[in-house]
Image (tube, rainbow, N blue to C red; front, side, top):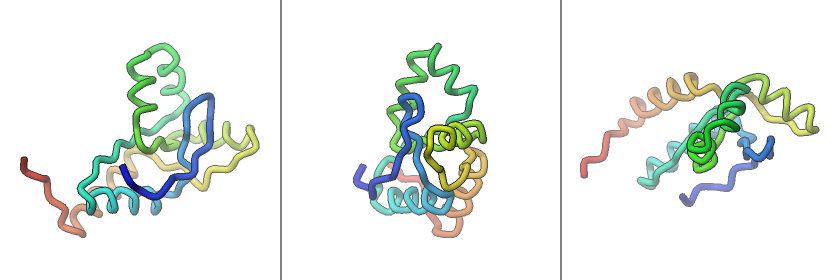
Length: 112
């Protein structure tokens, strides 16, 4: 995908995007405008634990274009490591914002 590079913070081998909700929605809108695929994952403490146990989940998350801090524990962990995420971006809030964006911009499903 040819989007602007996203600043990332490495957290236990997972590159967590250091972005705001506004930034990730803008990236998604750019991807839609370019008809590019954009895979997004969200991580919280539970998913980090599950990723250690489940190789397929681990690979699926790391295969995403953007990995977001869904849980406050992820935000706090980056702070303990001396980094700062601009905000927590939850999956459900992001989905709501993307649906609002799709409606506002009249994005449609592409027919093959």
